Image (tube, rainbow, N blue to C red; front, side, top):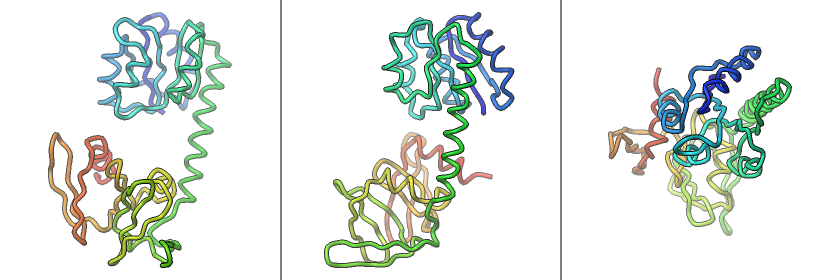
Length: 237
């Protein structure tokens, strides 16, 4: 697990790096003294985990997270206890108060391992293109093989499913469907659409470094800049 240490105190960074050497599954790949340095490092190197101080010159740790498009796992490290509630509003894995104790650090890292194990278990339960699902829209019903579904698209509080000449709506959110579908086949292109990669016909460059994907059947899908990067990583050697 690649980690970044962000703290304006060099002594605090060195002490945390010393403690982390005892955990062989954590590899510290960098350190930053402020939010600007950290933002640049995170966007370029994409660490799995960031140990993040809160009060720093310039922007705070909270402001750094608000500037990021893709947020890694976060463990806050601070000398103060009054930010604990706010820290968990940012989905932090843990909140360590300085001076950091080895047992508290171990507990925080165990949470990451548990979360990773749970995610891997969930991946095994995801529905692949070979699964068949029951779809009901009003009085009409279908038993659909997921390989025939081209795209899932938000429609108000529902999601529209496109297969063959049909496009029924189901009372499920796109976030729920993303959590249930196999990511090797079904890709979240933007906030509104999940596409079946087996239906991709061609890809073209689009605005500001993003791409546009054309699907068999006529759909044109604008991929967000953040998801364009994920798409390139997913489809590259």
